[in-house]
Length: 124
Image (cartoon, rainbow, N blue to C red; front, side):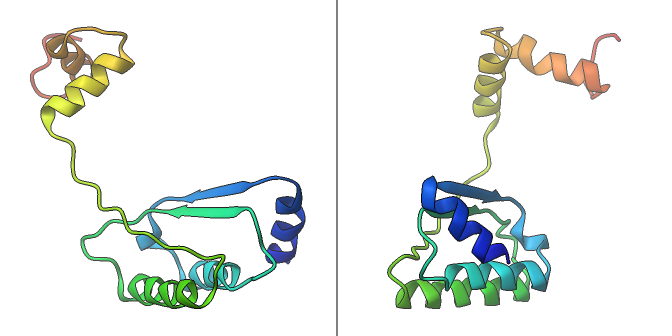
């Protein structure tokens, strides 16, 4: 039913699913993803899946290998791996500056600590 619904919806427009924390996915969800990837009639549909690398479960590793095999056989399936690194303190400060409209880094990083009661807070 899900694949049929996706085929109908994606005939008219592109659909993108973002699925975070695949390391917690159950077998039924991973089986559904694999069946979607094998559907040659499904067009204009993309899945961006993320998972933590430390290490993924045996179930997720098996699903990733299966999807890679599907990608080799089906022209409409492509799979890429992009490894993201942790942000360093300067990058976090820069992001906070952007979010808090250009406040200085020391002020930006102090605000969340104060509001969350974290260490280094100077008051309420």
